[in-house]
Length: 179
Image (cartoon, rainbow, N blue to C red):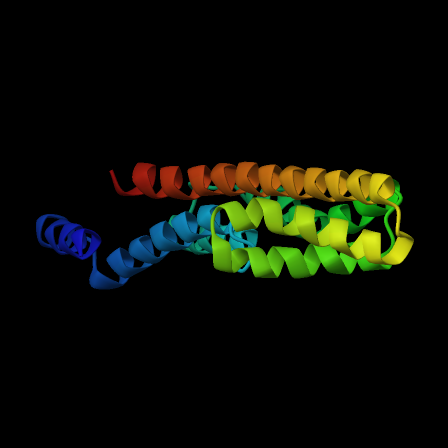
């Protein structure tokens, strides 16, 4: 509601059109939800941040160079790919089986229902249960679950950093363009 009020006041006191104000609000919402999506697995955070960046590029010509846009979009695509590949690769490096990978994924989804602790503990327990059912060795299951957890922390950190950087460029470009 406060965002709507601010947009109405800005529209009355500036020469911005409702269309521009709506796009500015959309960029802000996409940026904030994108940063939240770096931590919440069900929200495609990096994709939302990239959408905000593209809207900003079109809304504020000259504020973001084409080279910067392409560099940030390529970095965003790399982050999205890493988000899918790194957990599988790190679980494999830790000696994990397919059961551990599936267990980690199921634990992540189940953990969404017990936020925020479930988000952290879910993949860890899931990988442990998956590996223990496959190998029947508790020491190996602990090792694999820790590798799976490290992958979760790594990819979450990378997504969070990418989201903050992309959002910074989007919001600062809007700020400098309209002030």
